Figure 1 (cartoon, rainbow, N blue to C red):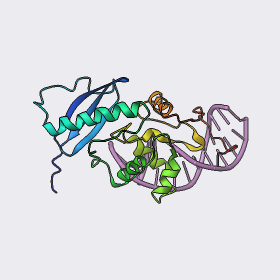
Figure 2: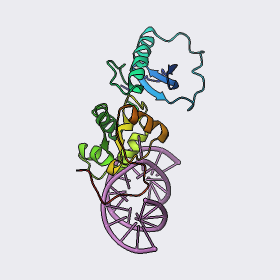
Figure 3: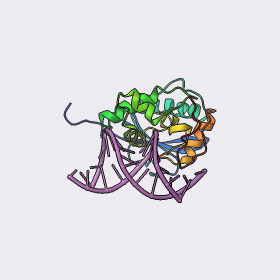
Figure 4: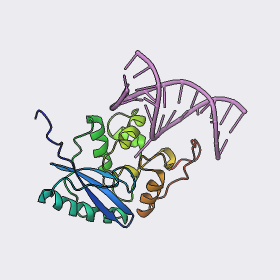
Length: 183
DNA sequence: CCACGGTGGTAGA
DNA sequence: TCTACCACCGTGG
């Protein structure tokens, strides 16, 4: 394996009802997804014609986004290239993928799943480093007591995604709530 | 080594 | 309910 030949990053515009996302592909699959307005305003075209395979993946990604943004589980996903993260991060991302649509987990629950019950804060960091938001559902991770918690892409997006899935959450009270727990 | 987070929990105001 | 602080962890400088 020497030099990871994944420098091949092709950017493609991904129009949705919620705006134009930008998808980036490596030679092994979808490597990143960016919310509308954030970064790369133009996918650019200098990169000649993308390989047919990538165009096919992009098609799948497009359908997957339409479904996800509508609060449904995509029927098919393109191969995901999550090789960029550290091992810990990849474990977290994998755990995120195990959360079904409409369900949630807390940062500490994810930490427990990884067998590292005290790495809750680190889990938050890994979620923030998630290169493929929406499809790798980092938005389904809430803080303790179903509090909203944070979100790299902006809390407005997190709320929207959760609402589309019919998920209920507490107002983002900045403080903790020792009382009334949800069992 | 140090500082910083998408945290969690406690203790006081 | 909100702020202040501490404990814990993985990352990056």
